[in-house]
Amino acid sequence: MRFVKFGLVALAIVAISFTVTLKAFDWLAPRAISPPSLQALPPLPPIRQSTVVVPVSVPLGTIRDLVDAVAPRSFSGKADNPLSQYVQNADIHWTATRGAVTVRGARDQLTITSPLNGTVNAKGSLSASTQSKVDDTLGRLLGTKVAKQIGVNIKSFNANGDIKGTIAISARPEVLPNWHVDPHLDAEVVLSDSGVSVGGVRIDVPQQVKPVIDKAIADQLGRLERQIRDDSALERSARREWDRLCRSVPLQGAGVPNGFFLEIRPTRALAAQPQVDASAATLTLGIVADTRITAGPTKPQCPFPPALQMVAPDTAGVKVAVPIDIPFQELDRILEAQFVGKTFPEGDSRAAITVKRAKLAASGDRLLISLLVDAKENRSFFGFGTEATLHIWGRPTLDQEEQTLRLSDIQLAVESEAAFGLLGDTARAAVPYLERAIADKAVIDLKPESSNVQRRIGNMIASYQRNEDGMRISSEISSLRLSDLVFDSNMLRITAEANGILEVKVTRLKPPELPQPAPR
Image (cartoon, rainbow, N blue to C red):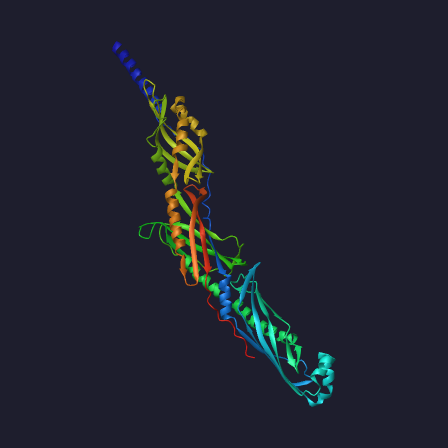
């Protein structure tokens, strides 16, 4: 009987011990602590567009050389008979030759001037029926005194005179949205006092010759203006460059297998109205392009735009936006390399936290860092370790100067308070060390990616650089800055913006096929 009682007591002790052990294991084992609820995020926004706006400058000296080479050097024509009721068989013929061309620019207007020198010859005869009226006619035209000097028995005359003056042609070019240019040409002829000698008396004739010269110049300018307005040279040149820009550019060298590529897909064409100053005439053209990073080469489709988008002339420059995408799996790997296996705080302390696993998640404008940690009281006799998950919020920020990505506003999530029931209040003292370590060490160095992007974009822009007969193209990528930072539930994207210049200087213009003056 005593043996039975002893067995029952022993069995009870074993049962109680087993129950206590289970409770202890349940208390010591890591528990699933509910993480903070995550805010759903929309997909990443479209990649910011890139712009390449190029000023094309033509020195006034280059324009002068072209005009001097192609503009007609001589003009000729006939004037109408101003005295048809008195003079028959009248033949008034004039010729003029221009001198050297001068080009001036101011207030977006080009003015081309040249001296004019020439002669006028007037031939004719008086009909028999008008002999009796010659005195009165000459008196009205020349005055009584001059009429007496000439005499009244003139039946024919052959008079010569000089033409001296200047011609000024102005142009205020305007770029039209339909890829054409309206030159807005205008001309003014100024003749100095000159005359025709008839019977030894000089008669002023600019008022007779100038309208004829004005009409001849206006006819030529009208034909030239129509030809320039209808010319499609600007569109043809733009189409060639458009096709050249539409491509995929290797970012890590063509010889690197599985390298990344920058796809450039121009979508819009830009233009600014020409600017003219005392040194040059400048036409600004550009494109807006979508850019993206791809794992392999692509063949983008880039339809040519039917119209130009007009912009301000001060928008010149190269701005190429390149996205740097970092998947969260890569961020997890970087985070674990920095923290897994590390103990905080370092050295001798009452309690320490050792990180065993790290994982990132996105919510709103912050990232949630979930750390599986092992907390241990170093000064406890037993020194038991306990596992739990700590959730820490952090906001990703860019350091422009250092070109790094780091976490700021580190804050322990409220849901992590439940973990301290497992870890013990002594472990709470180690949390500030862990937060400080996250702020100091959770850093991604973006310099290698930035340098690679700047170098490759610089090489792409440099491919346009040339110094050939008639044209000089200079290009440079001067800086690269990290701008936008966005993320969704799977990816963090940093936009690198390369800035530089691309300038074209035309040193020689190809002579166009100008309309020739109509035969007189």
